[in-house]
Amino acid sequence: MEGVPEPHNGWTFLTNHARVLAVIADDHSARIRDIAAHCRLTERAVQKIIADLEQDGYLSHTREGRGNTYRIEPGKVLRHPAEAGLSVASLLSLLIQDEAGRVRRPETEARAPRS
Image 1 (cartoon, one colour):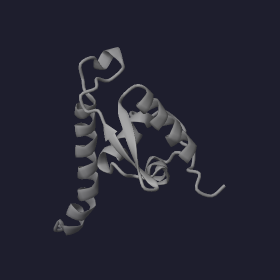
Image 2 (cartoon, rainbow, N blue to C red):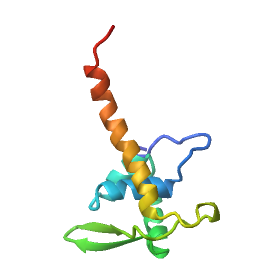
Image 3 (cartoon, rainbow, N blue to C red):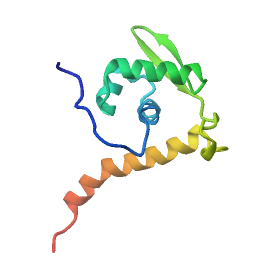
């Protein structure tokens, strides 16, 4: 089936919910298709994750034309007791810093002089 990402085996450090939230934080009008491709999930899985995030108040959306614009609630605290007191904004700031570093790294390495 075309467009369905390859399955991932094993565990990962981030949940799919965190990945979807990070993509939306980067582009508040991202299409579900684009979020799915970036996160290597199916579109249906992304729809379910967005519904979960909206149901618990982490995310809301408004319809604009044929697309959605999402709004993240940055002050909402994370759900797990081990992260008690940490906000969505603090999680996203870590993920966005990492993403910015990953995007810049190849360019920096390409320009670095070789010994």
